[in-house]
Length: 413
Image (cartoon, rainbow, N blue to C red; front, side):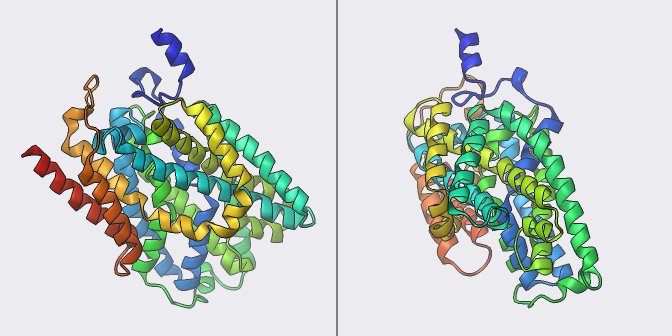
């Protein structure tokens, strides 16, 4: 029976990933790098280019990348060390029923970003190459939704295949386009960045870098649980997040400087690289969208105590049907929700390091609800969204961490 169950649930949505099913460091690196290839990160790159000169841009990347890398790297370590998904980790730190809160939050945001991603592919392609046809645009949404839902449905194996195909193509073709754009501009890249308005500080820019992917990064354990060791999970995540996000920010910045846009797709269209532009845009979004849907499916499976695959289908249908509406109406709300997930992530990290014995194999979890963890997420989200001083996601993490640590010692007494 155990072998039959293993064949059915190759993604171990309800159990730890066994050591025999762990994957190589190269595979993990490709999956995590593909995860960071997200077109919305280019929007942040555009904002950085608008508000900073070249050295300020580099400074913001280094500061923000280091903080984001440390946060996701620790989550990657915990996921790999325990073999548990984000939702199973949440059962240990929030309680079995308390984990429904974090699962609902991550599912809601990731399904939302999945829908936005579909529209981010379909709208510009229809506009630039298909005569701005509404029928073609909706057709592309449905086609992309089916393809991306399918890769998430078949789990970690198909995510791996998509990453191995997409990552090299996006990185190479996008970089070639970026270099060609810089060479066609006036002066050096430093001169071109100097046209910025100077309206951002390095700390403000670092906040944009962190905020661009901190919500998605909270789901890191869903993928690093397949790494062979905690060290492997940490290193591949830190390196992949820094390289992948930096590349996306550069794509967005060069797009703004060269064509006044926010996506390397626009640069490639201006360079007459039409088919390559569609390929890069589609693969770039695909590598993140299937990961987002996979995460949403795991979250819903935890809430409804069912298998992942049907929940992936449900998530994909919702995201596809609402894609254009989400793109037009919901991006600002999704950015607000982004601030609610870092408090979840910091509690998952603290939960492991403060209670390592509770994560040992075969140890029964009897915790129903950890109200201190729930309070930490709620208060952290409020502070992250309302306090204007500092970096929002870090503010939320700090509040959540205090609540959780206080609760930890109170409960021990």
